[in-house]
Image (tube, rainbow, N blue to C red; front, side):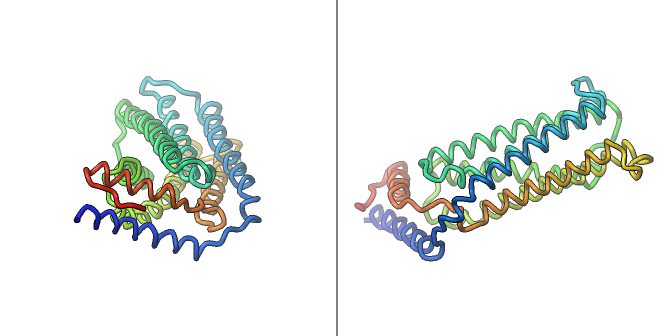
Length: 274
């Protein structure tokens, strides 16, 4: 009897959530027609950020290496922009882009993009710590390093919790329903923190490298300023797409019911009849 009661309670929670979504979020076909343009715009902005970072470090800062030199440091900004901004932004967007794919498939893609961003970010962190050690520069003393490390740690925790709550069925529907708003909030917060940390890093790098000529509108300074603006624009576009009700993924009662049944079976319980 307890098994039936628990499964029935999970169904009631999901039914209540579906009703709230269906009542409060009307579908706007006009809004959906603009979605591809916003997504395409975000990709153009994201690729531009990565390319400009690569040009900045490759052309103005001497290229890339893995030998403890300043060229190894150049790996750091490229990896962080690629990982914690571009790939992470794309991971946030997948639930809006793949609206009609099965939720399980989208969850897997979401987790894989997060994992790619995590791996690339680790490479970037190793590069900057290796450079600081070789150059006898103190670690973790600047505001940029504090904000960046906090962002990375929260990103890693968010990824682990996402795997545990949503990709692998160990959490109950009630627990997932409680955590979902937090997951969404911290997902957007981390994007803001990633962009903000990059802006701090850009300013810090410019002041260390071209402090005497920065005010003269040198090519390197202008390019870095443009990079900062593009990073902000990327974050704004992704944030708008994710928070706009017009672009929300439509509810799928069959998928949610199947998720509850699979969850109860995985715990050795007997799912209630639909």
